[in-house]
Amino acid sequence: MQVTILSEKITRIRSEILVLGYFQDVRPITGYAGEVDWFTNGTISSLVLQKKINGALGEATLLATSKLLTPKILLIGLGQKEDYNYKILQQLSSHTIEMLSRLKIHEFTAELWGQEECALDLIGSLDVFLQGFLSGFSLQFSNQIPTAFNLLTHQTRRVNEMTHRLRSYGQIKAVPSTHMDGLHIPCRGLGSLHPETRR
Image (tube, rainbow, N blue to C red; front, side, top):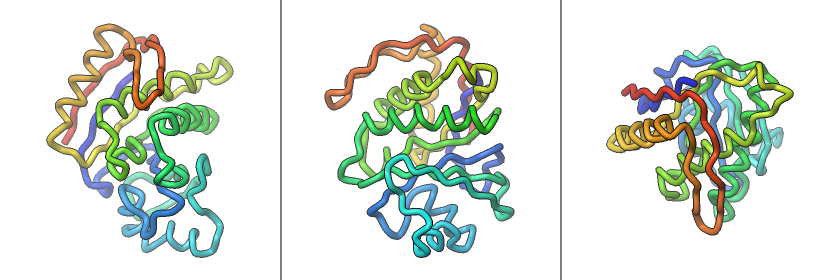
């Protein structure tokens, strides 16, 4: 599986689909979803105002746009900001990879949802995200699992650290056990992982 760490403007991302998160109780919308909202002339905000979406935990909304290089956006509801934690990040990651498999997505670009807004540890969030990703693999969709993904971050100075962490996963062919805020996720096999960095 090809994994690329990206620190680029959302307008420069060319991917099959963007997978972005937003909180139910944070307005205006922040993070990469806020940037997409801006560049699409308030598409997301308009849906929120019309009460068609609200960012409830686990809510998933598929959007199409011609205003970005990436034509599809999957919005993931992160729920209430004050309730957000590593366990929710892991659960959302697991749920999302199942959705992407059902949609027959081969390559996607995502962020570590809520990591920056909630000041979660970057490397801990990376571990938890990948653990959820792996636990979401289903035998039913094993031949439809994405073969590559890009991970977005605004933290340009820590891109090399994230890439180094990914390389360590590849060497041991597993994501290490994670203990974050009482969440324990055992070590899982990762198979072939090929990390890259692109800025």
